[in-house]
Structure formats: structure tokens, C-alpha cells
Amino acid sequence: MAGFAIRRSFAGHPNPSAKADHAPRLKPDPPVGAGHNHAPASASATPPVPRARRPTHCFQVGTLAARLRAALRAWFDAGATTTPLILLRDEDHGAPLIDACARFGRGLPAHVIPLAANAISQVGSEIPAAAPALGAAGLRLLGRPRHDLTGLTATLDLLATIRAGTGHPQGAVALIETDDPNTLKAALWHKPRPARPARSGFLLPSDKRGLLVAATAEMIRTAPAPARTIPLPQGAPLGAVVLDTEACTLCMVCTGVCPTGALMDNPGAPMLRFPEDACVQCGLCAATRPETAITLVPQIDPPALHAPKRILKEEPPFACTGCGKPFGTLSGICRIWAKLTDHLMSSGPDGKHRLGLLTKCEDGRVEAVVNEGFDPHDSGVRHTHPEDGYRN
Ligand code: SF4
Image (cartoon, rainbow, N blue to C red; front, side, top):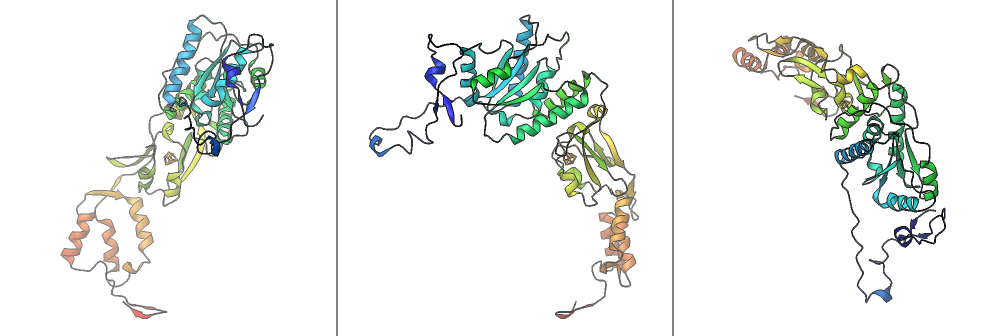
């Protein structure tokens, strides 16, 4: 039924004499732009009637999460003894389908709570993770057939991995791709489960990341089996970084590129710290790190999610050989020394002296050059270039 929309007259004003279980009559979508720029010439005398503005809901994960929590709270406060199923749909596609489901045949199952999102393709793993944690039996996402839902499918696969790793039953969260009300109805009708005696009441953070971490932590807390480290596929937004402490010189380039502040320095000492719950596994640190000392490990490590900042590496500061002021680290200075030993600046009669400047702080270097009267840039060695001859 590609490209069809439910007739508004049918969905909005049902005929009382309509037979039960009749599928709604459908008609093709109007061509794109009909009634606007592509109106036929004969209709040009009549000014086009602008379409009514469709209601738009800016996708705010905090708002959606609060509505989810309010719906579930109202459900249980009303004395329900079964767990509801959340049906998340987008405004344009889902509303007419649910309308048709509700009006014909057996109607919409009583345990289904529809919730609107701006577009379900914008939904990340946080809302599907939070719904069962807050007491819902599960969550269904109503998608449009023949639309690209690759991202959403990957999100649901990730959630299935987390639920499997924590021992929760599979199938709680699923995608329903249909534009047929009967198919939707068939996918929603099942025997509702009895309500759990204890439901999670965790405070919902209003940001995507915070909500995902809180819902994951709740899944771990209520895991049927003791929670353990759960390996996740590459690209998952949770995980750790492993630092090769031999290769790392604490240059701190990674702290400058990390967009979430997961890699942090310590203003008081050469130190690299890492709170695992902040890492989104973007890979910028691994790509930027000069010594390629960082490896990404997508995973959920339950203790690490709540651990304070771990120290990945620390070193005592190196003291300037001139004034004793702490600056840099021994490993960093040794690395630069090794790289410059065969460099032009290390050759000539003052080569060793010039290399020695590496062990001084910025003030100590200036002082040494001025007081000792040598040019730190002139090694006195002349080289011959094969193409343009002698060159200074
Ligand atoms: S992977 Fe991204 S978020 Fe994680 S520590 Fe590296 S730069 Fe920061």
C-alpha cells in the first residue's frame, strides 16, 4: 500500500453503519506540490489555499521522557494490574493509523498507550531503554514502510545486546513497519502481563546521554542475573578507552579534542583521568593522539559506570634543570630528546648544548640562550641540495 494515506473523512467521521473489521478505504497521496506551485493552469485564477500548519513537536528527549513517565505513573496510579505497552509513533504517519485501529474491529488493545514523537527516526536508544525500566511491558515503534530506518534498527540491535547481556527477556522493544491498520492491530494484540510488584522510579535526566546511562544502570540493577561486563558492537555509544601507558607521554592532546570531557587532565599534576559514563566512543582521541596510545573498547562495565574518574596515567612533573620549576613530564622530554638526537639542531659544536635546552622551562631556555650567547637555530652545518646546489 505504498504512498497511501487514510481518508480523513473515514478516519475522522466513521460511518455508524460500517461493518466491523472492515479495513479503512485508502486513497493515493496527492502529488507533491498539488494545490501549490504545480497547480494546473486552469486553476491559476483561484489562489491556492495554504495547507493548515501541521502540529510540529520539537524533539526534546526530556519532554518525551517526562510524558512517558507521566503516562506510566497515571496507568499504575489508576490501579491497573497489568503492564502497558507503549506505542511510539510520529505525528503524520501514526495518528491516522491508530485512529483507524481504535474505531474498527476489536479496536486498539486497552493496554496500549500511544505516545507521539516528532519523528521516530530521531529516537535514540534512551527512550526504548527507559520504557521497560519505568514499568512498561515494552515499547513498539511505529515506522513507515520503505523509509530508511537503518539507524533505528541499529539502535534496537544495540538495545537487544544490552538486554541480553543483563539477562532481561528479548522482544520488549520492537519496530512495527506498516501502513496497514489491520497489521498494526495484529502486532499489538497479545495477552498483557501482570504488573510488577516493584517498579523503577529513577529520576529522569533530561538529556539523551544522561537518560541512556540512567536507564542502563536501572537495567543492570534489576538484572535477573548478576551484572557483568557486556561487550558491545563497534560504534556503540558506551564504553571505555584503554591507554598504552608506555606509549603515552601525557601530552594531553586527547583532553583538548574530547567533546564530552571524558578525558580530563589535572591542573595540579601531570595526570590523565577518565570517567567511563561520559565517553561516547566517538574515537576523536584515538585519531588525534600522536603516540596512538588509545584504543576504544565499546562495552558496559557496571562498576565503571558509577566509578569516580579513573586515573589512566600519572607521572611526577619534571623539574627544570635551570630554575627547578616543574614543567612537562620526564617521558615527554625523553620522547622529544630521542626524536631530535639525529636532527640538524643536534649537530655541530653546540649540538649537545642545544639539546640540553629541552630540559629547561620556557624562561630557562631564554635565559640560557641570552646568558651563554649561542644561536639555538644555527648549527653551523651547511648542506648541499641535489637540485639547486649549495643552500644555507
Ligand atoms: S572516544 Fe570520544 S568521548 Fe571517548 S574519550 Fe575519546 S574523545 Fe572522549
